[in-house]
Amino acid sequence: MQQLSEDIRKKIILFQKTEITEYHIYKRLAKRIKSVENAKILDQIAEDELRHYNGWKEYTNEEVQPRWFFVWFYYLVSMLFGFTFGVKLMEMGEEKAQVNYEAVSKVIPKAIEYQDEEDKHEHQLIEMLDEERLQYAGSVVLGLNDALVELTGALAGLTLALQDVKLIALSGLITGIAASLSMAASEYLSTRSEKTSKHPVRAAVYTGIAYIITVTLLILPYLLFENYYLDLVIALTTAVVIIAVFNYYISVAKGESFRERFMEMAGLSLSVAAFSFVIGYFIRQWLGIEI
Image 1: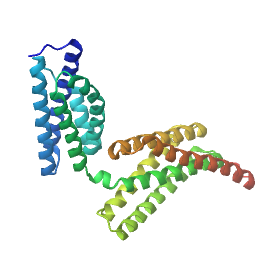
Image 2: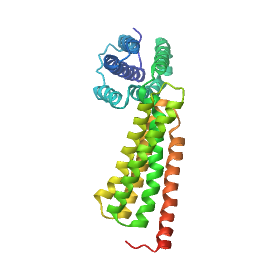
Image 3: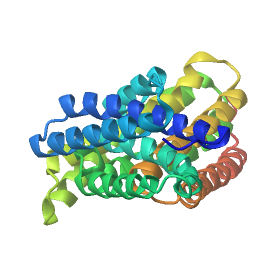
Image 4: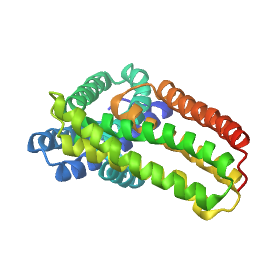
């Protein structure tokens, strides 16, 4: 067995940790995924990761424990947010870890073989990632985007026009619930007329639920605090957070640009809110309403 430098040895131990950690993650996911074919692929990938771990162990003669925190973290993320998101998020971390493979390959040629197999795993995973949650992502985007644009604009206008948190909350809820039902019905009719694999009812449900959740989160500050300007600031901040979280999810799961999508949605929602705020002021002045 060749003598390894301390730097190379540390890198290989890191590889061992990564391999044995991913072995446990893929094994657990293979038991929970519904598709039998995909479960077999995950199980095979897990066995390859274990083989890599044992291969690296021949050079270090050291048993390495998995990072149990990451095992359970990625497993729970996959269960909560979907297998696609969890695996893609994990693969992003793995890409960063594989930077050291080239340095090790100069000393241990087998590192190239392992890296090629890791790349093959990534392609296998990408091919099998086709969840219902992503098929209906467009419906969720429709519900979120419409709710954010419409409600941030409505709340901004109502805040200055009414200046009463209960009236603003009441008006916002009525507007939001009516709009969510309208959007769900529109998505149902739209999906039904299209020749896609999406089920019209499911598409409508995803759109309606996304809309209702967004409406609830935006209206909530007006039900908790009496200062309507503070409520508006919290509602707009909440809108930006929702946009950031959802676009991060889509950017990871679909491999799209986070910054471009985030700036577009946030810019649109905040611009409409600012315009509606000004309109609310002028309408209040024009009608001479004092509440």
